[in-house]
Amino acid sequence: MKAYKILYVEDEEALGTIVKDSMESRNYEVLFCKNANEGLYAFRTKKPDICILDVMMPGINGFELGKQIRNLDPNIPIIFLTARSQTSDVVKGFEIGAHDYVKKPFSIEELLIRIQSILKRKSQDFSQEIKETVVPLGDYRFHYDKQILIHQKHEKKLTHRECEILKMLCENRNQVLERDSVLLKLWGDNNFFNARSMDVFITKLRKYLAKDSRVEIVNVRGIGYKLIV
Image 1 (cartoon, one colour):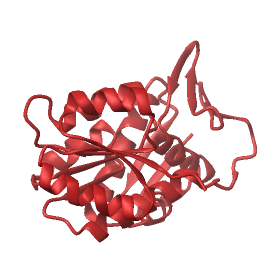
Image 2 (cartoon, one colour):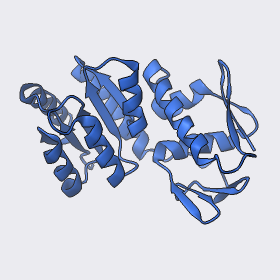
Image 3 (cartoon, helix red, strand yellow):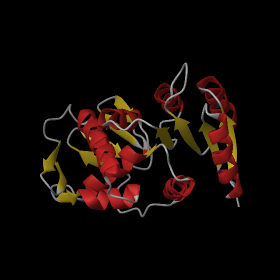
């Protein structure tokens, strides 16, 4: 069985060594880097399956590194590790495209469970509930299998998470899609941070669909969202 490859960037060497050893004890291959430059080089050359990035690093911080990695691969899972607890910092991490956000100090066991959960979802073959290869949404065409949203001649490449949320909205078009059902299926937990992450993705999808006023994602207060076409 393939050993998943983890890029782990942490400038605190003592902590980094402990976390690295713990991940390796679970049969992960760990690329441990102590700064963003090393991390970016490792990402380009080693092609990891998931990235775990400390935010507070000297020079290029974890958020900036995350942006660079996300530009190279829009679908790579990213977990941010940080002592920051302000909501604005959490939202910033999710806007960059984080799959999860773990606050320091953290339990090694908790981190390992989160890694396992993300990698399981990444490798899982989602049931193909949408039968059409191309889903029409007003002037848009949604290619689920290619993760592309097309408007006229413009193509927007979607991230894996954006694609899965839009898929669920399409499957429930003109009906209410419960927020918790999305969180539990795609994130595995409906906690506050995951809910904020979902809000960020919904905002992005609204922006992508803004060129056709007949297509709209509306909030249904206290319940979820509705894709109106």
